[in-house]
Image 1 (tube, rainbow, N blue to C red):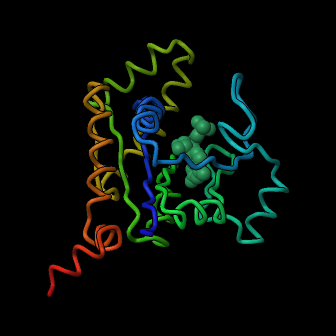
Image 2 (cartoon, protein in one colour):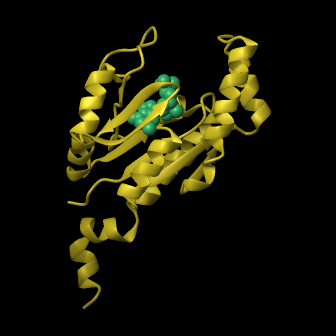
Length: 204
Ligand code: 5GP
């Protein structure tokens, strides 16, 4: 059985990453979403074990010490990290895994798994991103300015990804991410495992 692929999706908040990933998961049953561990408090509506595994700082630090995390980073004063054991068991079973993490985590995953596939999701413009944040009506000008600064920092790492999806029209962006996942499965090393008998027979 071919090992599953690791897809790492990175985006600034407001680029539509969550919608895009949800649509991919609905369209492709072979992709599983990694549920991260975090020390941040749950937001209203978030569910333990579904959106995140919410744990405290001491528990998180124990996971770091035990090398239970594949990658971790501190974002806005909270820890976020990905379970090593769980990811490995998913890909060993031939399923693809998708990580929604920040640029710091994406760098660590790329180092550990050079074949992992980085996908950067961008808004069509910086102004459009700011407009989306304002249209949510959730934040004051002050907070919006902070979010925009964080978004610019995140977006400056776009060139560390293998694929860039500009999310101007969500339907098109969904087709793009579905296409990336399908294309990766057609790469020769994977096809050699999946269609071993055929490919070997062609070499006489
Ligand atoms: P939020 O608190 O808004 O859910 O996420 C804040 C940031 O942390 C986002 O950029 C998100 O992609 C990132 N993040 C979520 N989970 C992980 C993780 O497991 N590792 C890393 N490095 N970043 C994460």
